[in-house]
Length: 272
Image (cartoon, rainbow, N blue to C red; front, top):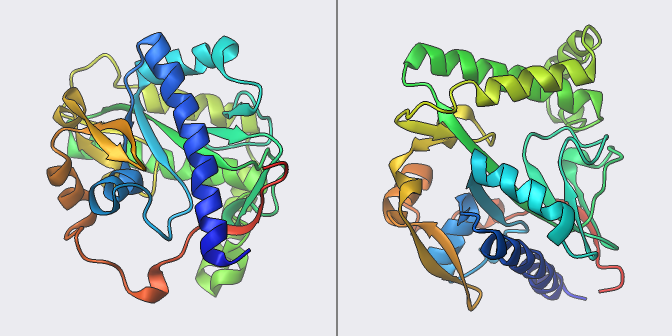
């Protein structure tokens, strides 16, 4: 199988997962929206970015929790809902719906022991504080909690090989992580994420690349629209161009060839 054929196969299976997510959302009245690279892909390519090997869906926290609950009875047997509560070796604060019987090994988690099937990411959005100072404090909590939890579950070990500076950061976090129980960090992180929920703040935030980048105006998720994605329709931001300019700058420009890479180390399609 050539690299292009492998990517096309991967995209087709990610669509299988995405359509299952969409089915559950429609059945249960759950609002969702394409976000990040999937929004860019829908606008610029009519679907997946050709070299992108994942798919991103967002939900407000209330809808996210409804989705998690709905999956207990509605998620098909071919799939696995992975959260830090359903998979004891998965330390990330957002969900993945995985395809059973497949393997998608990422550099970030190649030494971990969590379920590693082909997946679609589902990001919960929470209220971010209006105060710049409070946002910096919350961003610091996200950063620290993430890294301590990752290290405890053997995620992010590639940092040791990247540079001396990254290796020092890794071992420093490793030392600090030994002072806290994993479940205690998780409880603290959950509390930090939801601290401002119930307040109609101007911004919302999800746990992604950086706190600042992942903080977006609440108004963008109040109005959604359908957009074509791989000849199917999914919801995304109504002000999609404004979102993409904020998130990517000139999103119409393609990155250099050397930057057109995905996240995977190894893919096994299993029975598919």
